[in-house]
Length: 169
Image 1 (cartoon, rainbow, N blue to C red):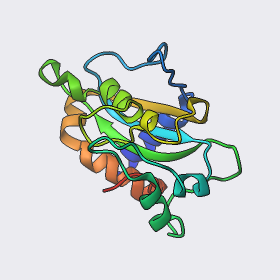
Image 2: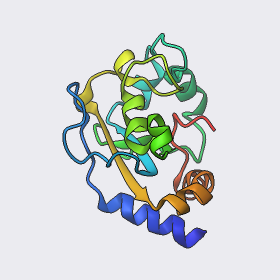
Image 3: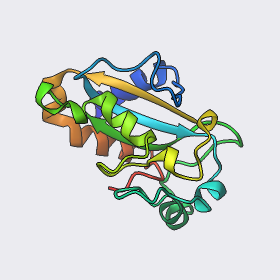
């Protein structure tokens, strides 16, 4: 498992950070029904996260509460320098044709959009909605590999490389 986590991290590092736009996802977006891991990055500071107003929609992550309660914890990922993008969230996404609301691309969209559905960051509904300060990246996995190992990959990546401050579990 450790070797596979290192492979996933190397793939993440090899990928460029992708900008999300209000018009949607233009390029660099995962193909429909793909599955894998994704990371959300911001250049907002921890202080800005601690003072954020979260979306009022059901299922919104309470950005300020999580940030405030975790900011001093040793294994939480923190920004290396001011105004540099740093990982604040990671997750998994994948579903077949019968479950395209939860495929990799749909999960990324859900983190940014201010919808009523599943729990997510709902960035565009928060006070931290300047999309110039947000990026994402992802690694696509084979469906069988994903289905078998997704929770272990998500958790073990966090245990090895640090826990993103806005990842709840």
